[in-house]
Image (cartoon, rainbow, N blue to C red; front, top):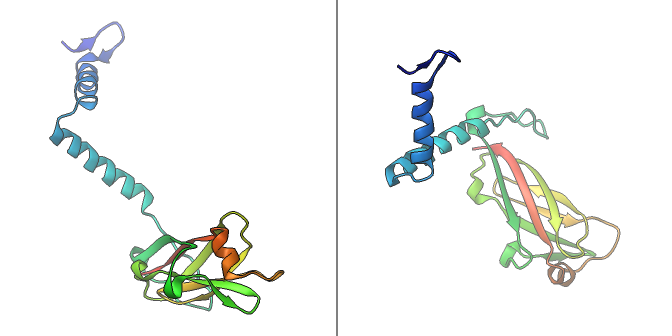
Length: 161
C-alpha cells in the first residue's frame, strides 16, 4: 500500500527516490546526465549571481544592479607590448587589459602580486578597459627584476556593463 503503519511513513515515494538515486545518478543515461547538469547550472548561477555594488570613488553614479559585473584576470610577467613590465624612474609599472569585461565606466580595481620575490604594488590609473599598477616606493625595482622573479598581477574589477 505504500504506507508503513508501524512508523507512519510513506515508503512508496521513499523507495522510488532511493531506486532513482541508485539506478540513475550513478549510471545516468546521456540525456538524464545533460538534464542534471543543466539543473545544477541553473541552481548554482541563481545562488551566486547576486552582485551589488554600493559605492564608487570619484562620486561616480552606481548603475543598474542587473548590469553589475565582477571581472578578474591575471597580468603575466611575460606579457608583451603595452602590457609588459615597463620602467618609470626607479619603479616598474604594468598595464592590465580589461577589454573583455566591457565596462561602460571606470570600475573599482583591486590587485595583488604573486611571484618569487615581488614588491608591493599600488593600483595607479584606472580607465574602462585597462589599469596599471606601480611598484610601491621604498627601493629601486627594474623591469628585469620583475620578469626574473615571475611577478604576476592578479586583479579583480567591479563595475557596470
